[in-house]
Length: 244
Length: 244
DNA sequence: CGCGTCGTTGATTCGTCTCAAGAATCGTGG
DNA sequence: CCACGATTCTTGAGACGAATCAACGACGCG
Image 1 (tube, rainbow over the protein chains, first blue to last red):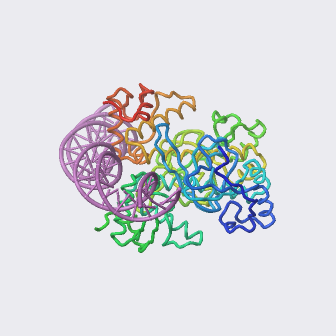
Image 2 (cartoon, helix red, strand yellow):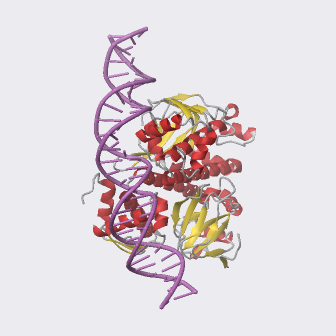
Image 3 (cartoon, protein in one colour):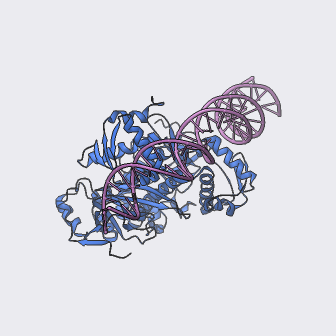
């Protein structure tokens, strides 16, 4: 793992970070928040396309996304890649390394990004002392399990248009939670990555998005999405048979 | 949640439990193991078809399977059920409740079963005192995330026969880890439940299993499975195009 | 400006679902 | 113990949705 892809930055301060209310140390009192900041020696820049960690890398750090977006993926022995999630600022990367001391998936920046690097050993010690932080951590882990279950539901029992609708709605909701527009945003990932995530081919993703545009549910130009009819998208998920 | 489906049993003792080396309190010293046993007030019998907990039930307990098997499932607002996992003795149920104080999925006994009931509050306190137990718990949570990723890979990028092969191999491996035969076991779940889990219809499950039997990879009579050619099953997952 | 990556769209093929009927098994009560 | 209905499983024929193959267009970077 060469360091060439990374640029170390001065220690970030959690106290002044805009994400402090949604990130790992949320709800910490200002004293503890300050102390927590000290266990983070530095943040890292990761450039588009570069990997933050790979499967089987030894697990030493957790990462909080500060800026940019990541995908995580697993690759079967035969070489097929499956995207398992997209991560935006305030979300935690590396959780599936906790159980085995080595990472289970790859994490790749899908745009230039910056992460906080949290040494897991120190973090663990801190958790043992601070029950609020420990609670947060368990909560984040459990939420990751829930996220997985939602994805299973999506992959296992939805049709292509339902998958895409649910995908767009999920993004919409997460952008809104971060203070951005819930109706206008940019798809940071390619059609192929969306397809891998949803169990579809990139052509199908493209087709369905075009169909949504034809039905005036969305406007889409390349990576720019504008949701025109939020209720209509939701309706796709609830209606048994959609009208043409 | 009536209690009629459950039968309380005297407090089980972790020290004498046959699963102590694979269950939550694994690796605990005998003193701690004994102390841990005391926070478990009782075990519960759950009969086939009954639910241990439902989505949105308030989260107060974790459950360790002692005897029997469970499925977990989530149901979309429109009523389609998706099975998210099968659980056998030594595995922990209720993990996705940790993040939100209420359960996220349903857990249903697929055969008569018995679980240890762990009050989460007390468990949390115990974890704060015992770093080995805390470690185990994090490990179990993280393993659950990994399990989810594996399922995603299976649901998202495999064909029907590959899904079934990978499903059988997973069962085989888990039975072996529990001291049972890895080539002969009983499918506790129905074809429909397997199908829901794998994103297939029950007819497809049945067809593929018959095809495996025709190819002498397995013998199957109802729920009884006998794997004749373990390597052959694995080959299905690695070969690009299988011969007829 | 030219090249590579990414996205769109069309024609055709293939895999899985759907619908349907029948067989095997289990549980229950007479 | 056997008869009964209720599940569960198997198998077939046809329909449909998504994959595949292929060509072209749009954008971004050097």
